[in-house]
Length: 86
Image (spheres, rainbow, N blue to C red):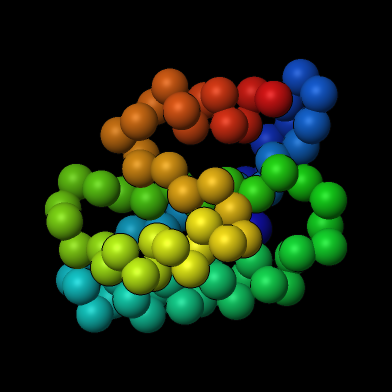
């Protein structure tokens, strides 16, 4: 995991997802998904934060990742904070 955040009542495992190109974003999504599969029994809240400055992320990749974690755009800072502060 990229970060382990200790919130008020729970720990959150956080993975980041960013890329410079659509193809790279898809490849990175597969890597993030594999890491969540490896960590599925860890017990922490799972949060994927992606860099949404550019519109390069496939909806199907977001949907797949949502099966394993909360997927939050980095620009939604309040939602990121709330997800890891629990």
